[in-house]
Amino acid sequence: MDQRPDNRSDIRDFLASRRAKITPEQVGLPTSGRRRVPGLRREEVAVLAGVSTEWYTRLEKGHINEVSEDVLAAVAQALRLDEDERTYLFDLAKAARPVRRTPQRRKDVEVPPRIQWLLDSMTMSSAFVRNGRMDVIAHNALARAVHAPMFDSHTAHENGRANIARYIFLDPGAHHFYVDWDAAASATAALLRAEAGREPHDRALRDLIGELSTLSAEFRTQWAAHDVRIRHDGIKRLRHPEVGDLELTYHSLDLPLPNRAVHDLTVYAAEPGTASEEALRLLASWAAATRGTPSRTSREDFRGSSRK
Image (cartoon, rainbow, N blue to C red; front, top):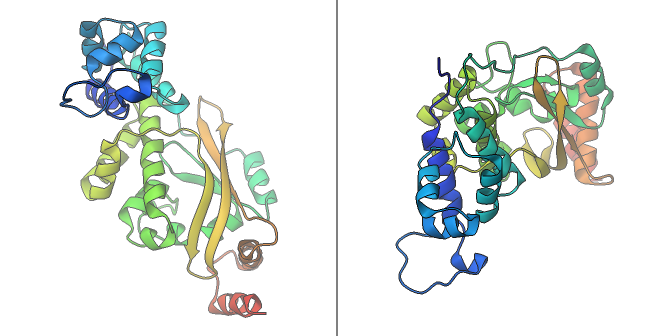
């Protein structure tokens, strides 16, 4: 029995969206005549990839299951896909190939105690582990303090487990917490898009995407862009309700676990000697002492120290 997901629309929309982003000038093609579509025409991509126009047209309509890796690589090069986009294209092709048995989804696994020990040892860094559906499945005390609005949000699961995507798109408070909410929303949708390519049989992931698409017009807009992101690092600016603005450097690393599970370890840190480091120090102090929400006294202490 063929267990392939029907991902032809994803293939079509992804390739068309990448094609629309490239101008003829960028690839050294002539630009004479009126153009009815933005970016490159299908026949121009075909020339660049070294295939026939008919063949590329068929590919862009979603018929990708019999395409060789060499041809996919040529198309990826013609469309100037970055590493993450290239990986996504190959994942789509893999999912479209016929299989005789039901593919196994990566199973959810508990984080081993040694990983929690690792997180807890990072006393001046906010660190957490998330799965591909953006569930935060383990964290240290400082991560709970830094991301308190997300953990306390009505969008958290009944067991108290926060979900980054649900918080960003379904809690209006996220617009205040993330100073650059647009960038956070774009990155989150792109991370989910990459996970959907990797794990096309993950029903819980499909349910999450369906929920976000139903309840958030902003998510629908981001999802329709077909942007893809696998690696995640940079600068994040947060507006914390107790200690004010934070500017943190973050970096994410793959964290392989048993049963094919691959989770993501994300670490936030502040530049030494900055006001953000002082704010993290205060948050770490009350988090270690109370394991709860910072009190009004904590906030007043911080504001008083920052004026000295």
